[in-house]
Image 1 (cartoon, rainbow, N blue to C red):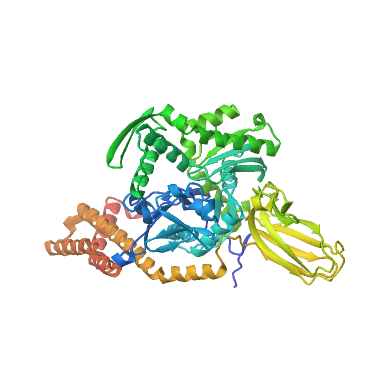
Image 2 (cartoon, one colour; image 1 turned 90 degrees about the vertical axis):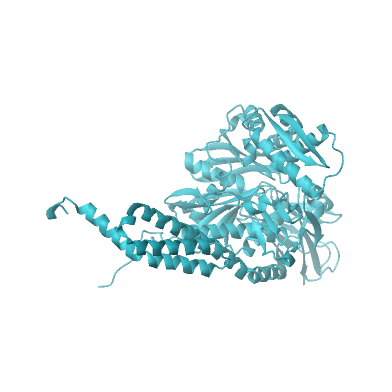
Length: 623
């Protein structure tokens, strides 16, 4: 008799098969990956149990035998020792030219201009921000695949709400380099709202105050029966916890009278100490700032009041953005039902107090501010992968900046206003301005200024083949389509003849399809090396576990062994312990297998003893 696979209407034919889909928070200072397991969203830990991965990559010198790069905590530990090749806060460079990067000269590593974008000059060559971010994303991808022991189907990756088209496209390119299928890009405040909305079942108007390591977003959302409508969004993609660190460091150096320029190592050390002091002041009234600069050791007491004073302009900037976004949403602050605090920088007492006083209510902090964005993204990823009955979860997100085209005189004609819900498609008709004109050049821009020179150029393309007509007779419809990721395509069509041209906007930050292919080839060239390094770590972990398990068994049941058998197992343990220092995974794996086979008889004896103990004193009918 044939077996039938039964499933509920609307479910996959195999309801037991799950796709591994994750949410990734690619942050300025640290990144996380989360997934829904057993119906609960949770952040996935590394083998050491830590869920946070510092967004830091160190490139090693191949001439001196360096093998590629270090990522995460290993790279963070080398930041002071090797600042020129240790790249942190790379998110601030995404989709930007060097001139557009705020405080670029304060970075400990060297940023240069290449093909219209900011790239990092390292001992291993020039690295684009997408390549650096891909290293971080690939590490998170491997973590997810190890956690589920399965390939990754796809990921929802979060971006700051104020990321423009170029920065969003750069993020998608980084994911492609990391071998990740992007299910969707969603705004970080929206992800936080998903986590809070589904956890707390709340409805109403909420403000999402998101202060991360390098970006600040403020969004006003309305939550109604599973619909997350972003009413307005604003912020600053160059303002975050890093700026608080720099402000504190500058204040301390001024107090100590240090006027000389610091070298890269000193800048990195001062910045690291400023971060430590800032974090200490979240739970104490004062802390000592200690650092060695320009040949002297400085010690400066820093009180919580000192910190608030020297960083006050930054906190004020965030509140200015809050007031503006409330005006854009057309609501008063007392209409806000709750204020959700997102991002590690919201742990600063001055930030929580300032926000609480402005809204006259205690901000919501019951979810970990470091994890809430990744958790929300994982819920959305689970739905998009078809694993959840919440697949009809509706996200009405918005674009942060207006989109338009250049018109005569260098003016901007806006077609998609900022804070328009996405996905969306809007069109506008234009015409020719010369008799007999057969082509039209279109320049796509993004921004809120009236002059093209003050906005960001996104793309240029031409519509050719327009029938010759008198000026003003042609009717050319220009359509802007923004997808669910916030990415743009533009088409132009002459209504009478049907002549059409279109462009999928690849912003002019310089990364072409050919460059992506070349970078992928580079990653393939180092893939073997990466796999070997990963296999070595896994082999060492397995060996440690095998040794620990065998020693535990010996401590409990060594009396089952003869002297020769015990000596044989001890010799195998020692051989495995010695092999852990090897740089060859195969050597460690062989020693692990030898110990496993050498203890098979011991394991059988222990099992027999366990069964005997379990059955002792029982009658046959009781078994």
